[in-house]
Image (cartoon, rainbow, N blue to C red; front, side, top):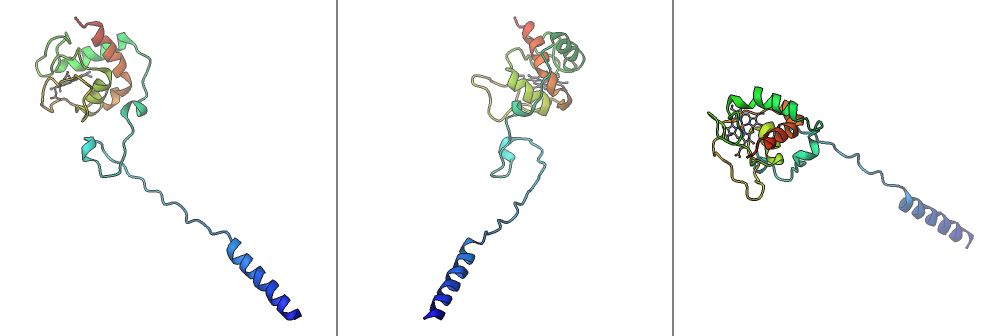
Length: 148
Ligand code: HEC
């Protein structure tokens, strides 16, 4: 009888040990990939891209700075007067800030266009200026200050 109690106790302890032993979770596998975003529809399935405005750090709006950039960089193709079309680039007074942000940093129009916005040209001739990302609000403010 005594040995039964012993066996029972040992068995209970054994079971207790098996069931309470913490199971070590496998270490998470981290996959890092750099993807050049050309167009959202060209991304592999399941890859989510943060909206651009979430990653772009902008400087405070400075119309003078925007003017300097517009007159040194943009009028190579656009008109000095952003209400009229230039030698290569179209007028841009009705381009919303978000659109200009994407156009300047990627050279492309976004896949999903702002409501009511129609691209002036279907060409893909604009060069990208990723280094100007933080200055787009200033350029946009300057362009808007000239809107007729
Ligand atoms: C190499 C010539 C070139 C330069 C430089 C250039 N653009 Fe453009 N831009 C274009 C062309 C061409 C288009 C028409 C679409 C296309 O072909 O990409 C365009 C379109 C745009 C549009 C969209 C207009 C619309 O309503 O459809 C915006 C906004 C714009 N450019 C802003 C700028 C700004 C701001 C700069 C200066 C930082 C600039 N671009 C410099 C050629 C240029």
